[in-house]
Image (cartoon, rainbow, N blue to C red; front, side):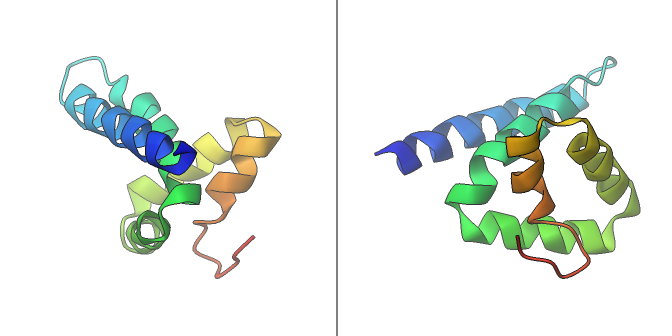
Length: 89
């Protein structure tokens, strides 16, 4: 039940984040990263997709790296699962 709830909340936040990135004030990235924090531990395909995107899109990798460094320790551990270096924490 908790896994399903995390998937629903994460998906909603990612959707809001994508819509928010299209506005003049780009607060969408914050919602998108928070949504990914919910989705990465509960959905392995999302973790693989984020890892793939980080290896191909430099801007996305830099943004995720900045978010990882700014996040508190428990969330930093979740975001480090998607680093391109091949590490799976």
